[in-house]
Length: 180
Image (cartoon, rainbow, N blue to C red; front, side, top):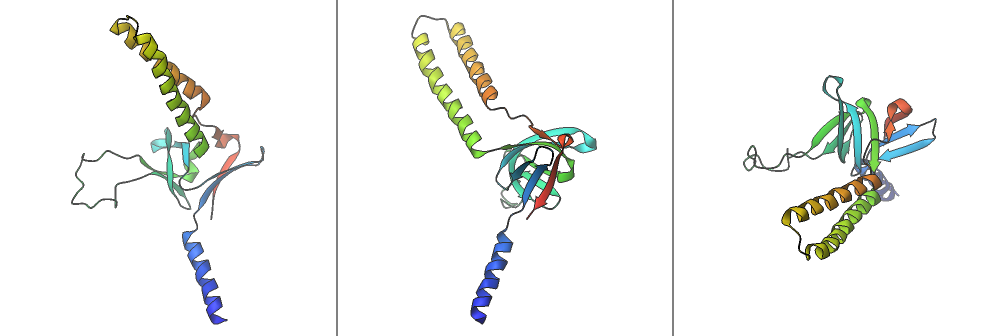
């Protein structure tokens, strides 16, 4: 019996060590709940330095009791002897206090995959469309302008289908809290 209770205790301790915190936004008026976990991609609108409004779109890497950490930092990833200033690209790394968040939008995995699929499909479609047009006698300036027009059109359609602007604001009744 002692051995069994020891294993049960060990299981609960290990589960509590690996339990991740979640950032839960609730709106009582609309009766909606949006839950963000580590690994979710989100857009946050928040009060930055001297209460200047800032917007960041990145993957959540950590959630603490009072902050949300977005992106990765090279600190601790590579040995100090290897890292030199300017050698590696600067990664987006933001630490935002939860009380400073004024707006947010959760980006689901399905949404990101659908946006990528539409973009890749548009690239292939424009290639086959423009391949037939380029085979005719056309000046290089006209073909460049035509390619730019198709590219900007594809970008516009993608942004219309999958906007990434802020969807929920705290002034509309959304409240944030951290849940274990």
